[in-house]
Image 1 (cartoon, rainbow, N blue to C red):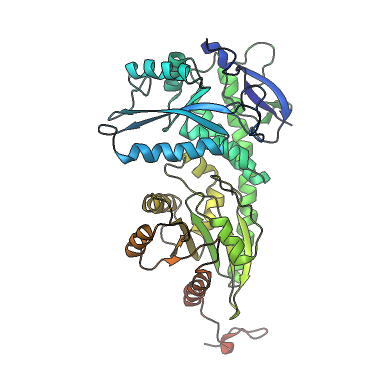
Image 2: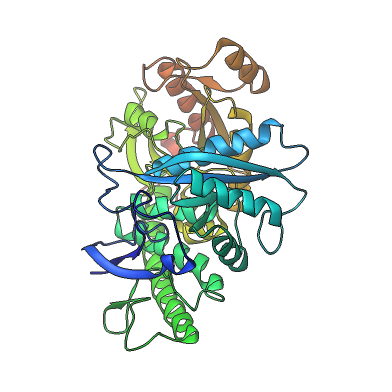
Length: 439
C-alpha cells in the first residue's frame, strides 16, 4: 500500500521564518490507496481533511493574472472558481492577489516587484501556500517559492489533487494517477534537490516513487520510474476501455439508445440522474464529486428503453493531462446517441460554462453528438437570468432536479429526441429464423 507524501511543514502559528528547505518531503502517516494530497501534502499539523472543526485548515493566498487594468470581471470570475476549487480540496482562502499583465513573467509568473508584495502578504496573513490560477512551469514554481518562502501550487495541480481525493474505482484511481504523473514528469527538472512533488506508484519491489533509498535517487532514475509506472497505468486503462467497448457494442446490437449526461462541474448532473433513473449516485455540493461513469437503464411509459450515463464534470481550462487520462471515460459522451448538457442556470457564468463544456466536447471528438440543453436549478435562478438563457437557447428544457420542476417536460423531450433517432422496427422487417429480414 502506497504511503501518502507529506511536506515537512510547521503550522503557520508556530513559526513564520520559513526557508526553502521547509518544503522537503517526508514519508509517513496513514497508508492510502491514492496519493490524495499528493501536491499540497495534507493539512497543517493536527489538521485533517475530514475534520473541519477544532483543527486549523490550510490557509492560501490566491494569485491570478488579468488583462487590462485588473478591474474587469474576468479576474473576479477566476477567483470565484479558484476559491471553490480550494474549498473542495479542504483549503481556506486567506487573501487574493491580482496583477494586470499581458503575459506571465517567464521566470516568476508575477513581476519581480509583485513577488515581494506577495511574500509580505503571505507573511502577514499567516498563509501556508499560494495557489495560482494558471499552469506554471517548474522554474516559475521554484523561483516563486524561493521568493516568497512558501509552497506554490498551480491550478492544474490543485485540480489533480481534488481528483486524487475523489477517485473511488480502480479505473478512476488509475486515470488520476496517470494524469498526475503526466503533470509531474516534465516538472522533475529543477526539483532534483528536493523531489518534493513526486507522485506515488508501486514500482521497484513495491516501494512508492519518490521513496528515498540509500542516498538521493538520481533524476534520471526518477524519470524512468515515472515512465514505467505510466506504461503500466496506460495498459490498465486500455483494458478497462476494451471491456467498456464490449458492453457498448452489445447495447448497439440490441438497439438500446444511450444518453450521456454532461456539463460543467456542480451543475446538478448526479441529482438529475437520480431523478430520471431512480439511481443512487453520490450527490455533494463540491466540484468533481463524480469521477467514475455511472450507467443506469431507463424505461419510459411508452416502452422506450435507453441508458443514462453520468460522466465527469468539466471546468474551464480542464487540464490536458486529465483529458488525455480520462479519454476512455469521456468517450462515453463521444459514443452516445444524445448528450444531455446540464447547465447551472443560477450561475452568473452559465453562458461561459456552456462554451467551456462545448470546447471540451470538441476536444474529445463529441462535437457532432446531438445535444439537448437542460437549464437546471431553475428554483435558484434569478428571473432575469432565466429569461436571458431561454432567449439565447430557445430549445433548452428548464428544470429543477432538486424540486422536480420541469422533469416531465424533460422526459417528454428525451422520448421525442430518441424516438426520432430510433424509430420502432416494423414487425414485418424482423429477421425470421434462419433467414434475412424482408425488404
